[in-house]
Image 1 (cartoon, one colour):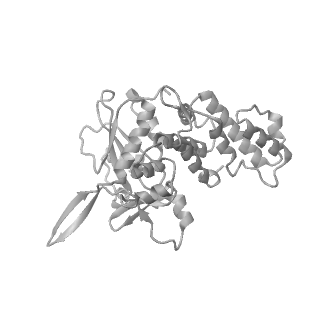
Image 2: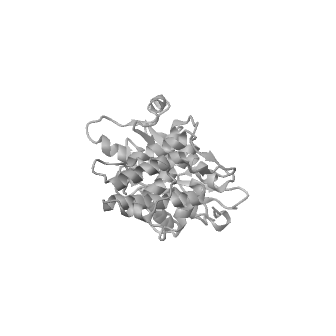
Image 3: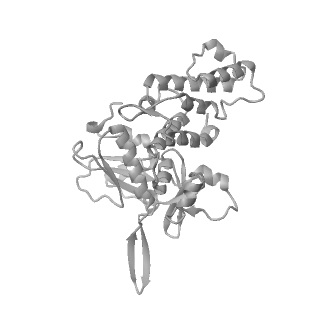
Amino acid sequence: MTAADLGASLDDFWLLGARSSFTPTARGWLQPNDDFLRLWLHGPELALLAESCPAEIALHQALMAEPAVSVSASELGAIADADARANYQFFLRFRDELIAAGTLEACYLSLLRRPQRFDLPPLFLDGLVAAIVGHLQAGNTDAFQVLAAQMLFRAQRLSLVEGRLLCADLAGLDQRQAGAGLLDVLTPDNAADFWRTQGKALFALDLTHEISTELGHGFSFKLALKHSGLSALARVLSQWLQHFLGQPLSIAPLQQVDDPAWSWHIGLDADAMRLLNELYEGSALATERLAQLISLFRLEVPGAYPKPIYLGLAMTADKCLKLKPQNLLLNLPAELALLG
């Protein structure tokens, strides 16, 4: 299974969570249900085709009727197509892991902690993230935060337009391609259009820290962006981490770290981690490397960890971003380590 195979169905996982379709535990974590499992069976790699053999049809129908039903090795082995057989094996391994874990969150942490020993396509992780984040946004009327939340499971494309750094869903942009007109940037004025399309219309999120206005005669002023996508993303990241840690915390965007006691940092993607490591070590970075850094953030967990933790978000050299929310869970100081 690849991103192309299942990427389109991530919307379904997101919407399932946003409709509050899961029963939370006392901790607020989400118990798996048949509707969640059936979504995988609707994906392109598990949906029935005209050429599906009788064994595959029988298995698919049995799982649709009862997603947790026991499946024998002989039932799997009877599927004629090798790719279809492998995809069912992936799904059943994931299903069994999820049921054993008891919640989406516990399953997610389990998969993260043993990636070498549990060979599953990354899209299973993205499906879990989409459902959890969707649930966390249920009832939220802040369009900026809802759009920023989708960055946790959708790859993004960054572009610099008239001094502003804009971020939009990579797959949506690829589908849009040529001749579709200018991309709408989410603003308070068009937020109603975002809700009218249930968030499915393609909007860009402005990740600019501040805007600079020239007044002439050498004078200018800088104004913090009131509806910053970075502030919305910071709220999303706070919500995500607090959901797992179960204690109050705050995350705020920064333009630079001015802290001689800087002691801990986490990159929210692979490029950011490398950049933060180099900055922490005092390395001189080329201008084009520094330009990849989208933003820094300051994480504080009062009463649990005495110092601020700095987070970084960066784009690749070709201006793409795949935010990894797992980094925020797996790279915490020992005092904040998740018990699962």
